[in-house]
Image 1: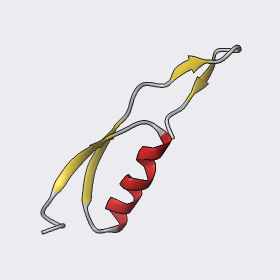
Image 2 (image 1 turned 90 degrees about the horizontal axis):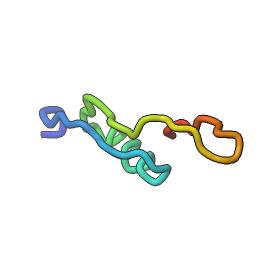
Image 3 (image 1 turned 90 degrees about the vertical axis):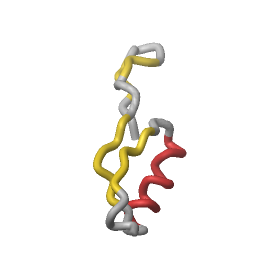
Length: 51
């Protein structure tokens, strides 16, 4: 069943990384990951990348 299930994972914050890792290690087939676009933040407006 796991091999037949294909899905897209949506999540950006740091806490979304571990569930995605567990799904892929558990044999699920993730066909894509959608995150928020990178954006400037902080005093220097340095780009903050998704984890």
